[in-house]
Length: 159
Image (cartoon, rainbow, N blue to C red):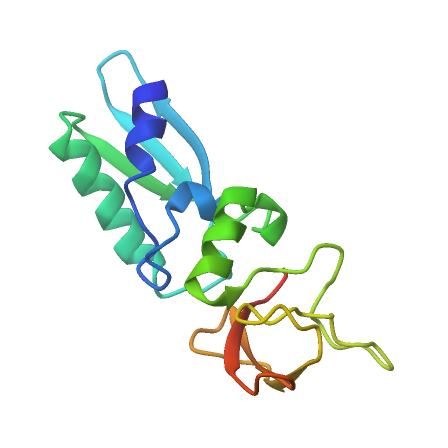
């Protein structure tokens, strides 16, 4: 089973290719029955995520390429995915890629009089940043701008 988990490190997120499905924390379970059938359970980062079909295809392909067959990928919606499931290594990869990782202890849902999270700029590390749009290049990211270096950047929203 450890070999299968190691192979899954090779499967990248199609929207953020520096992250593996393990970095994202979307792989919930891996099972192999006595006949050798492998079942991988994945949870989408949000309901309706368009990348999940591609991720499932890629998981099947890489495992079959390594000799595991048959392979089934199932989607598990409960419990809902949370950015808490992302690995610390994954958050470091996001930052190096130019995307601000989720800020611990924050929830991005707007509430009356709620303050936006203090999101450090991935380029200059300034916390003098401003949200420009709740939606960035994908639905799981928001668009921010650093008020010091003036560079726009994506922020991976907390869920």
